[in-house]
Length: 466
Ligand SMILES: *Cc1c(COP(=O)(O)O)cnc(C)c1O
Ligand SMILES: [Zn+2]
Image 1 (tube, helix red, strand yellow):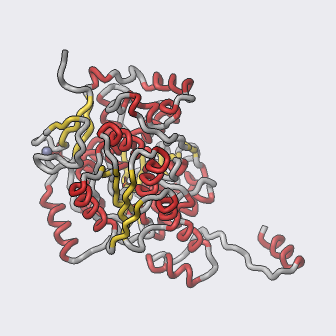
Image 2 (image 1 turned 90 degrees about the horizontal axis):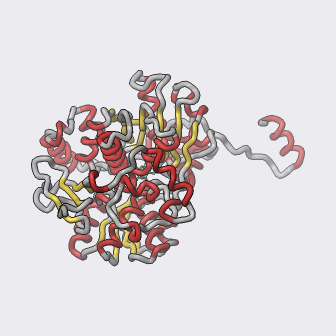
Image 3 (image 1 turned 45 degrees about the vertical axis):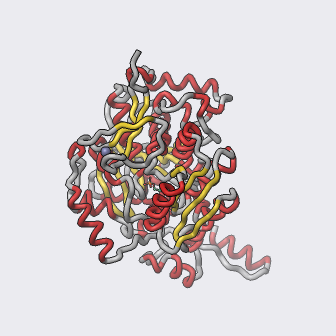
C-alpha cells in the first residue's frame, strides 16, 4: 500500500518543493517562505474521465454537496472526505451571453459572456473560496478565523461563520476604505470587526502577524485551500460552454487569488487531458493599483518555470515603501498594491499565455454603467474586466471573433455609493466620490428627472423623456 497521501501541500518554488500534510495549517512554506499549493496524486484521486461525467451530479442536487457550484466538482478538488464538506449553497451563478456589452467591447454578438459571481450567497466570488477554506478549517479543528479585507472577504467569512457556527470571525479592515454594502454584511453577521488606521496592505500585514501569534485560521487568498474552491468558477464557465474552452478569460486583479486559481485549474485540466487547450488569461489592474501591470507588462517579469527575476519586484516594492505610495481607485476590491499571490499569478500567466493591462477609474465606471444597462450590474472592481476586454480589443490583442468571458466578481449592490454618484445630477456628490478619482464625465449616466409635485408637469416630463 502506498503511503503518499492523495492530497498534500507543496511549496510552489521548484527549487524548494517542500511538502506538508494536508491537515497542516500554514500559509507559507516553512523552509523558504514561498506560497503553497494543494497538490493531488491524480492517479489515485479518481478524477472524472471526461468533464461531462460531472453532469451526473445535477440529478442529485437535493444533496447539498451536489447543489453547491463548488462541491459538485469535488473530484477536481479532492482534498477532503465528503463528510467534511462545508457548503452554504455557494456557486449557483449566472453565465450570460451579453450582446449589449459585446457591442461596447467591440466583439461580434454572441462572442461575449459575463460570468456573474455576484449571485453567490454573500454577493461575491469569495464564497467559492470560503467554502473550501472552511472545509479545511473544519478538518483541522480551527475555532477562530480571520482575514484582512477590502470588504468582500470579510462579508463572506462573516457569513460562513454565522451560518455554520463552526468558527468565530475576526475581520481586519482599513479605515474609511470599505463600502457600506460590505461593511453592513460583516456587522449584521456578527463578526468581530477590527478597523485599523491604515489601508488594505497594512491590514494584510497585521492579520498575518496576529494569526500566527494567536493561532487563528487565516482565510485570505494566501490560504491555498481558498484557491481550490475558486477553481470551480472556471469549471462552471466550461460547463456553461458545453465544456469547450473559450478563447479568453478576463478577470480583475487585486490580491491575484482568482487569476492564480484559474491558472491552476486550467493547468490541472490540461494535464489530466480533460481540455484540449488552455484559454488565454487577461488580468486587469486599476490604474491606481497597478503593481502587476508594472512588473509583468512594463518590466517584463516572467515566471520562467519557477525562477522569476525577483530583484525586479524587490526593488519595485522597496521604492513603493520609500515613496510611501498607496493604492487608490474607486474599485475598492482591487485597491491593493502588494498582491499576496503575485508569484502564483506569474505562474498562471505562463500557463495561460496571459496579458496584463490597467484601466482608469473613468473606464471602469463607464464599463460598469454598460454592464448595468445590460441588466445584471456589478460593483466597480468587477467592471475592470469589461473595460480591460475593450482595451485589449482596441489593441487588436483580442479578435472580434474570439469568445471572451468576463468575470463579474461582485454584486451590483455592494457599492451603491459609486453607482449613484455616477448617475447623479448633484455635481458636488459626483466630484466628491468620482471627480476625486479622476473621473471627469459620466458617459452613460441615467439621470433622475426632477419635477414639481404637479400632475401636468409630471406628465410633461414623461412625454418628453420616454
Ligand atoms: C476580491 C475581489 C477582487 C480581487 O480578486 P483577487 O483574487 O484578490 O485578485 C475583485 N473583485 C471583487 C468584487 C472582489 O471582491
Ligand atoms: Zn519552500
